[in-house]
Length: 255
Image 1: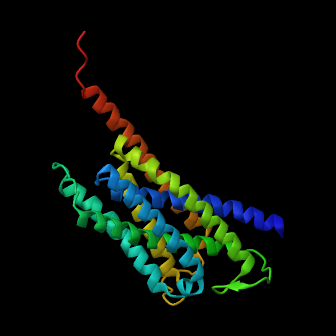
Image 2 (image 1 turned 90 degrees about the vertical axis):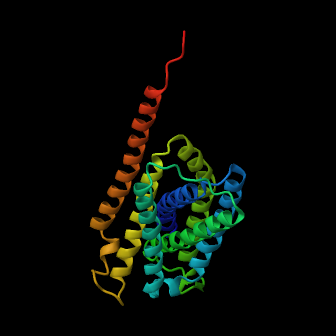
Image 3 (image 1 turned 120 degrees about the horizontal axis):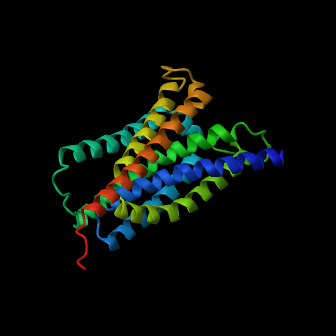
């Protein structure tokens, strides 16, 4: 049993780390228009919200798993912020985006980050539940309708994911400054995670528009991760090309 629990914990840490990185990307692109000092404050509030919402979702497992409307709202929000950004970028690509420095802009940015945290918390919880419920029950105690041993594994995976997010958020802010083209890739990934939540919603027993086992199938997982990696690679190579063009367009130094 210890080996089985240890293996699932390692897999869950990896999965939560990836989801935490996605969450960190969202925070980075949402706060990047703020002045540097306000960026740090907004990231702090975002990380605090991620901590609260992820562990609140663990305590509300039985509620969140059984109420498909919660999953649907999370999916719609992630799809909205992704499409809204992409369409705005396309409509205003020839104009510079104004810097928003007012206090109301700062708090509105924080609010958007917190809403995204809620959506990612739901996605994180669903992924953790899918792995944890495969473990044998310990019979120690029950929390939120799940066995205590399974809950501890989910708790540790989520905690380590948050530690990863803490360091990843600042790194992604710096990367977005250095490679602006990564922003489009980041929002494509956000929208794709929204699609993933939508698939969970459509597979919910009360909705049953697709096979309830499809979200956990090898086929869907292969499709999801392949496309997500594809978006990440697209952002990387597009940024490299953009940086190379910018370097070539710079005037050569006089000798």
